[in-house]
Image (tube, rainbow, N blue to C red; front, side, top):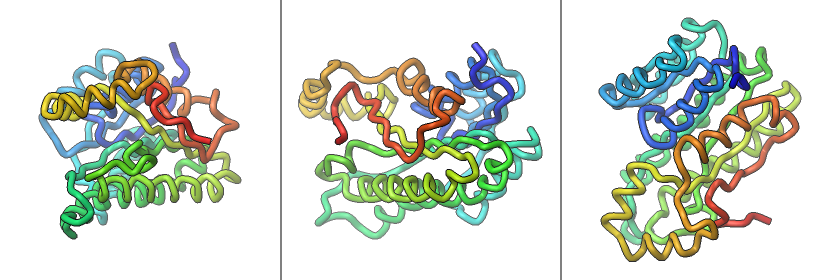
Length: 251
């Protein structure tokens, strides 16, 4: 398969979970991928997996909370490959707490690792995406769409990402750049750990998914990302794709 042949993609949080699933789906379609992650050990391990399909992929260790260094990520990719075609803003860290108990530190964690990197990486990649008429894929969450309890800092940052994605779709559209969102429920390591710690809540969540399962990282989430990164989605922008087994149905 070669739907992304010759394309260069940046994927934040690419060392594991959804990011790894997307990276794997991309390289199988011919893309050269730069995975960006704080975890050096996991990043190098994932890179070895990716190189089985695409020898030119690279790993960039970076702390996305260091906002003044985010433009360097894009520069490293351009230096390595000469272009950027796809930007996937997947990484995000947060802690659960009620609104009453949420601290400034917890708000900062969510916005500094989710919203701000998404914003600044779109800004930094824009000149190169103009050249390639590229694609941007950002990430939302059902926590923001439904207002899940104890997810105030996470939901706020995710809905802020949805807001700037719609703005970016309007501003970048004239340059031929598509900007869309995936809102997933996936079988990530974090989700499985949470399910083990909260079995009753997990079973309740699962029973509210019409397809009665979690999404597979590569075959479910990754394949939708391939669609949004390919020319098949050229006439779609500013949209939120609910890749959640039917859990939320947007109107």
